[in-house]
Image (cartoon, rainbow, N blue to C red):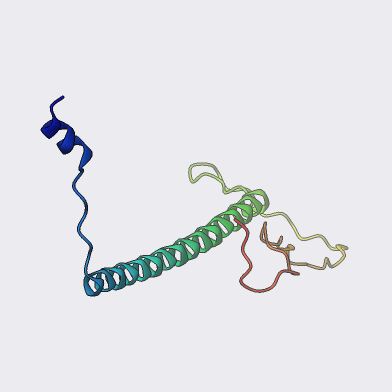
Length: 123
């Protein structure tokens, strides 16, 4: 290796110093972008939380509708076909004791607890 090549390999290009005003402006710009990014992340997290709450409420309502449909299907009398001859009406019973009609108990919505504060969701 000759002395000129040796000198070139030893002296690497040194970075030039950045002016302080430029560095401050760049840092302020980066901090502003970081703040905007964090605000956007918070907004997205809030939207996702609201979406999950709505999906949970929808799932609870679907479960409740399914339970009610099963109850109605089990309690509904069978409807005779149109082609079949209608049954003769049954005569009223003379000594029939009056029966109290109580509405069916509505089951609580699964996943809800009355002791939880309003707005509490589990997902």
